Length: 122
Image (tube, rainbow, N blue to C red):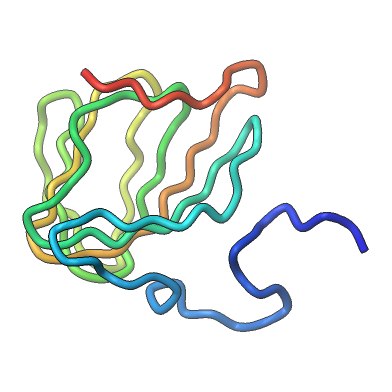
């Protein structure tokens, strides 16, 4: 059997992504699904009022909101993103997230193969 490229999720089964991660009071919870040179996928559950501080990444980051809502600030411009919506945070551009209400999202970061993903706090 070959190594699974996507981990922490049962293969060949139907899943509701939001059901795979639980909220933790006053915390940010995450589950890494894959972390490869050119792509990373992580599920997050973020409690109301919590978030991710302003940072930038070496790849384009796509946030698919699964439930709840979040204020996402990209290059100083804040937007509210709700369940069922998706937004792209461009590579090298500062962005941050703050939970308007508890929310869950799938983060997919796609980067150039010669650049390793690094979270860079501002």
